[in-house]
Image (cartoon, rainbow, N blue to C red; front, side, top):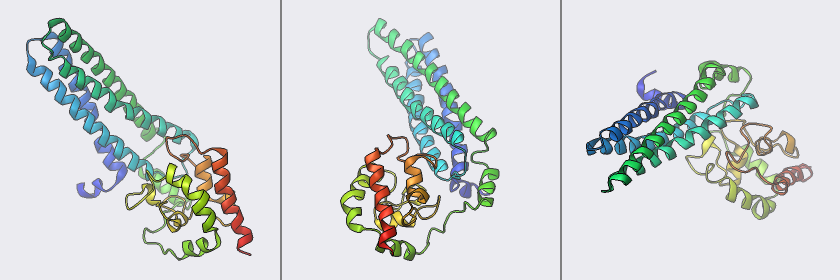
Amino acid sequence: MSFIEALRHPPLLHAMAVHFPIVLAVAGAALSLCAAVFAKRKSLLWLTAIAYAALVAVALITVWTGERAMSAAPETLPEEVWAHIEAHESAAGTVWIAAAVAAVFALLAFIPHARTGLIMRLITCVAGLATVGLVGMTAHRGAMLVYEHGVGTALVVTQAAAEGQTAPPANASDAPAAETAAVLSQVVFQERVWPIIEARCLDCHAGEKAKSRLDLSTLEGLLRGGNKGGPTVVLGDPDSSVLIQYLEGTRQPRMPYRDDPLSEEDLAVFRDWIAAADSASR
């Protein structure tokens, strides 16, 4: 696989990206300690601030590549593994915050007051060490996912394919979705289902960059499904519908991802809408 091809492969892209936060976190901590010891060398403070500013950017990019890698993970992973993935992503989301704090205090250390400057440099050191700890914890969780559970490796993908979890082609026909839409109540969809989708789902699942290629901005897109699980709705059977399974958490990760689950009332709206299609299709 060429370098360009690797950039198009989410797990490999993430595997490349994760090394940069480690390097920058260690470099930032070392620079902050040197800046505290050699207080007269202002260039060390500038280098510290630059290192942590770069770490903020790199950490955000790494989170983004991680989300793309997660969308490519097979849905057959055990719930325990999905819990580890979510913990890994939560830890990764704190790295850029800690780095930003360290960068701000490094800049505050330029205040022309000896005691204040010293305090700011010491706080920068503490923030830097905390950042190293967070990066180390995140890296440890990621390593456990790869080396213990095989997440992101060819073995897991091959096993998923063997179990029939292959993704539908991106250019799949919209005809089945259109036929299903004709049976499902579009009035109920517009009045009751759509407001929930609009409020809770479209941040991630809309347009050409919809995660898992699941575009919920139209009824046809919802029914067509994405690259995980296939069509989202089984007429008259909410329990067998992939949409319900993800919303209720019987398939992982539960949706909306990393957000509060839908209320029982909202889930009932989706269930009733799908169940009503059974009688409408007769």
